[in-house]
Length: 263
Length: 206
Image 1 (cartoon, each protein chain N blue to C red):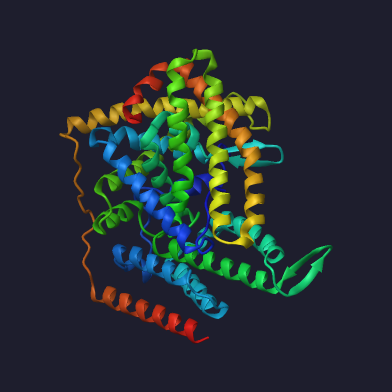
Image 2 (cartoon, rainbow over the protein chains, first blue to last red):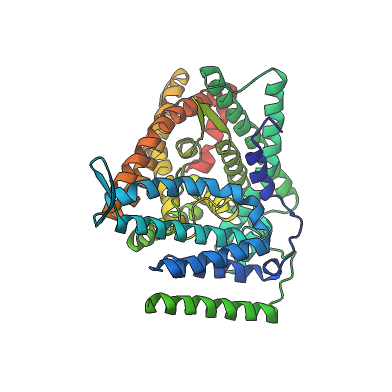
């Protein structure tokens, strides 16, 4: 696929309706547990103050990511790291404290460097855990689990319909993009390219509107009267291992918290 | 990048952002009745796909935010649409984080909503040939305001972030120009190809 960047295709395939079922201990756990555990992990991790506990939390997230098979998508972390790089470069220079080294009239402080490192570890630990526990869910499962956790049903329906439509519109996008390539269009940094891409997006919107009218008509034909029902394709049984996992995770996090206070 | 990672912002900023986002989201969802759910979903998906297109500028390339255009075309519906996009990007692509989802949503949605309030009335009043300028204004305003809010949420979290916030805001300036050009072009295209689209979307807008 030259039409879209390979990264782009990988993104959209991540939102496929049915993913190949991932094996691994984490992927067998209850989706609701995985979402709640990620939230709790994030809440606890951002409050850590010591580098050692943060390193342990990051290690735990890395192990989880490897177990869930999400490490193959390491490339997706580049966007996060670019933001962190900016903080890593500016924070040591702007935080007051004992000077570590000086470049010209700027001096890098020890406190600033450790603050930047703390932020780097926190952000990475949370994102890795998020990709490991939630990113390995099927998007449809994710929506259903959110609904079961009490998120507004209308929002969940919007989420589920949007996930499906992203896929269909991506196909539409590839078709339009191929038509442009067939007419020898090569993206460059000039007015013609921007103009053509503007029209491409406009065409995507026009097609999506007619698509939405067809979708609404098809839904009404099947008796849609303004309310959707959640039908669980996955029958979720809360297993004993889920309870064990929840308890183990809680114990791990509370011992990390205790360690962070003690240090 | 409009995605602030977890762990950077201070607790008051996170809580404030989350509360405001939930409030806006609740109002927006109440205004969106179930009949219009399919249309809202399809258009959210169209914006999601469009925002993943890489636009080359100079030696690098950028992704558009499109929140100005979303505000113009979707009105209040832009808020749940943006929230869904950010949620998917956080959970499946690793952009941003969980606790900052509220702040990130607010940073994108507030400019979209203001674009809807400021520029939508002009769409009906102005001559079709002038459509480009409304789109350009909305694109420029959407990106600059989002950049300002991102910088503000960083600066509110601590003195040390001031420089980073300034650098980040400066990096939004070239994006704002490209976004203005693209949004204007898209709006001109829609005006020419299917002017009824601009009218029929009124159902989603109010």
